[in-house]
Amino acid sequence: MFFLIMTGYILLAYLIFPVEDNIWKVPDYYLAISVLTSSAFVVLYERWQKRRKPKHLPNEPLVISDELLEPAASTVITTGQASISMIQRRLGVSYTRGAELMDLLEQVGVVSPLDKKNSRKILLTREQYRRYKQSLFTLSNVRASTVEDELACVDAMEGHDFEHWGADLLRDLGFTKVEVTRGSGDQGVDILAEKDGIRYAVQCKRYHSPLGNKPVQEVHAGKEMYQCQIGAVMTNRYFTPSGREIAEKTGVLLWDRDWLRDAINRRQIG
Image (cartoon, rainbow, N blue to C red; front, top):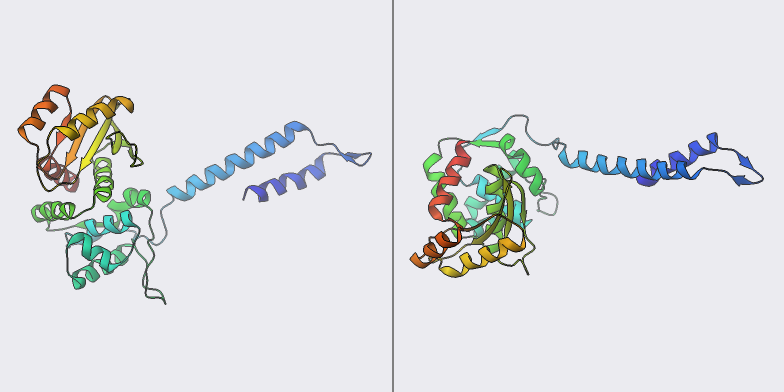
């Protein structure tokens, strides 16, 4: 697109600026303006394309009573794999149940229908899914059970998936500038986020047992490197007495299973 716009500027220059002694006299300012305006138009157009609502999405959110649809959508978006077997493994469901969820994901516009190769495409980016999730579907009659079902899905996640799930949860709770760090060399910080002008450094731990001192100490040190005011540890489990004690002394927030349960419930209600 940039070169097409520049071609237009060149053609316009042929009409405006003279050729004297076989030399085409185009002012430097014209070239600078051409490059700058062409670049600006391309950037703005790409941003508009990213923010534009995809045409295939439903005009009105569909009312769905399947409590696993949202975890299934998050699984597909996070892993980048629109496969029934992936949903089956991550959510711990049968193949038939996974196929039902995949059909629902097609219905709400997250994945495409099966093509000739018997495969599907993911139709939404992570950012698009987060932005338009509320207009895709609403859940009905699944309030209390949904929270526990989603926590059960969290228990089955891999560590990196839990980080992205936690980032999406924070966005839904009103946090901004949410970013998952690169992984290696993250200094004990998995998520960076901001709320009410306060920067948070969050470490995510998807564990099978209570957490002790180490993650609290790591995020307390890591928040300084990322110039954050508050450190927090997010986990699907709980903390040992020593872990709670050091958190109290360092000011690190402990977002344990009870906190996740409350946060999921608040997200569903609001």
